[in-house]
Length: 183
Image 1 (cartoon, rainbow, N blue to C red):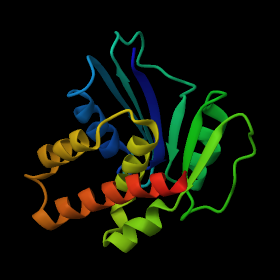
Image 2: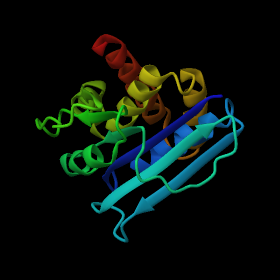
Image 3: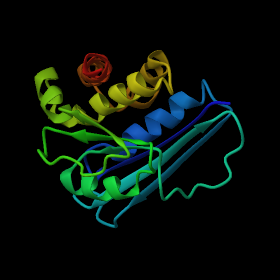
Image 4: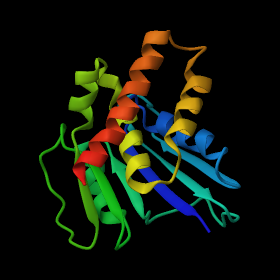
């Protein structure tokens, strides 16, 4: 039985919900049951934002998850929140480009990924979310990289120029490479 749960947290406008939707859409090619559950403040841009994604071969009993086994924190405030919530034995990815803080828990694994820095190097500061998604996919094996790229094609082709789509794909692949180099 394959089962993967992820919570992504950050501020609105940074692509928190987009990577959740991408992961859920890509998951439809690989899993029987998928859940995408967004949660955001009334002021979407700049307000706190998070989403839950569950990919499973078996039925999902509840969309509510207070203690994820895996989380991505895109801001320092999200890191403080997610550090408290990740269940023991779980993992937390942190954008080391936006905070130099380290977690204090020793019962979870921490990955300090320079997602924002890598996104700027790729050519689009807003692509840090794609760097995280690539790193998550490479680290967990929860989803095939090609399925995420197909979901990117489906979701962004009508809304973006080819250069933006290519930038997002590069950031995604670079995130996967970053994670491979991390280990």
